Image 1 (spheres, rainbow, N blue to C red):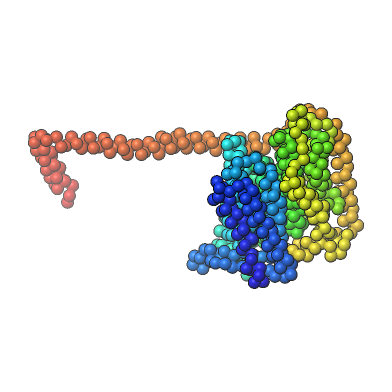
Image 2 (cartoon, rainbow, N blue to C red):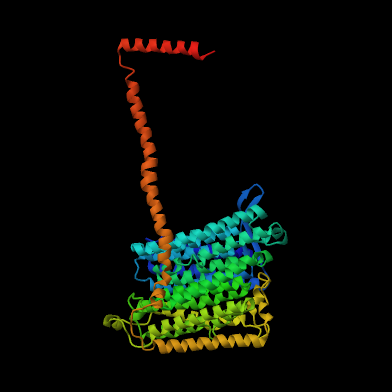
Length: 634
């Protein structure tokens, strides 16, 4: 246990050191040195995370208290890390996938100048540090520091190419929309402090801590935390920033969408599963389930008609996050965490694969200009195919096991929820294989110059793809349902000390029902893939019409937000600037100056130097005093 305590702080400290070295030395370090430092510190953190994971697996959990961060009266907020089953699992995901993305970046970003190359890796290291702080924090305040850190880093990375104003707008959009959720999270923390008197997980989730919360407190706190999660994990209505986050370099998209930022909301609710499992929180669980389902369906429908390879994957991420929230709302916290893990593998694979395609296409991201790339990009094609199979949920790939667990939790809650979720899953299979077929099969539809330069990516890009492809194949075997092997759900058993309430929910259905549900979803997914093949094997470019046009324009949600929120706020800002600021505030300030100036000129007339005027004023003064004396004073 002492060993865990002694090394745990090095896990986030190493990426922070990498950030400082690369950031401060960006004008002096070579690209090779930057890549080694940036990737090396993440590798070191990954090795330490494995060590911690093995210790935790052996029963060594610990709350590592380092110093008092805030001490005001009776309120003491320590700087502490919680090393347990949930945090150790997320450490592996963040550092493992993060390391592969760093290695990939050394080749993908090689065209950047040395200074910008170092700046990029400094931001990446800081991003990983912030996410590690978020999941390791032993209380809500440390989690919030990491929470804000990933928000800042997403802003810096999305707007990395800051000379492009559209990219800056995308970065601003992500930052501002995240602030909405962050405010709710902050209010929840203050509410917990007011009611419980502590922000430590062990205090808040203890029987004594929960006893201090009334039913209304539980509802308000859980809803506020969920709103916070909605911002980070891109749920309706705060999801529109995530597709625009594609403005950043492709490895950044993989980092934000796969292993780090967007999973923060899932982690937070899973960490607070004791609160959400209370009877008083049933209304919140229903809100989470229906919001997640609506998000999954909406984003999947939009992805059907997107033509930018990264936008398809972005809306796919929003949809998959919706599935995770559906699981959380159904009380299947383990299933949600399981899907976080498998999604990290296949979504990082798909994003990095898209980066390999964009690299080969000379920066072109429009899938209508691609086609036939499987002949030139064989490793990218095979790994991308594996990612598509995994996300579609075909056995025995990883996505099948985690998505099946989510669909089962929806079935247990309501067959209607299950039916809608299954439909969203079928849309997932269709749009992902549409993407695959348009990109890699058929004839090449780009320019002759693009076709001439098509080539497979270097080893620094393809090796991470291969590793992630292997993980996408075998990653699901840690959560084999009991219907296949009794005791096969090793992940559920591992997480049971932290998420005890939801463990074993899958056993509420008979094996025959579970087989039927699995068979139905698998058969329908295969039918959708075949349909996509016949629909797009001989693709001819055409303009979208009707509903297709609406989907291509993302249900016009951005335009709606622009009309309802952005333009009125701009007009209100203009009113404040032109009327309140210029005329009222500036008018008052200028009036004071003019008043003093005018008064001074009038008072100056009293000092004319003419004795007659002075005598007259003296006489008038005496008359006034006498009048006061005789007529006013009594």
